[in-house]
Length: 173
Image (cartoon, rainbow, N blue to C red; front, top):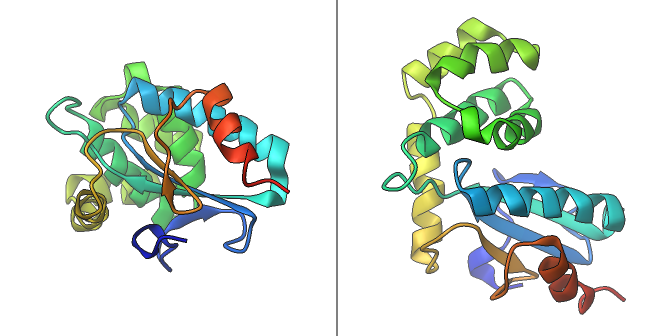
């Protein structure tokens, strides 16, 4: 695996780091192409099971998406309550409607402490973490979302399911 995209101890990861396929995504919760990739990744997780390890890293494109950084910080705040992946899914599901006014409702929906989540978001508790993750992406040449790496190699194709399946199949024994 390319050391620049190897799994870090504080990464959000689903699956085993020893899986045959490690898929790393630099994404933005307001990017429609990331929403498309999210659906494709969910299907790949169902299909490949423990052969796939998925890592999600924040790369909010704040110049294009006004709530991208807020959404990433909301996911981190949910992660602090052990529910990163639930919030991750909810943010993509509600992408077209997402805004600050939805944060309390999302917290309730996911059975999180509304007070703690809203406090974390309002105080920007996870801003530095999100910025650090994004800076790591910039350091390895990430400029757009989604940017995907399969077993350390940058995926040059589209982020739809067919393109990802085709790229991943060469790593499946």
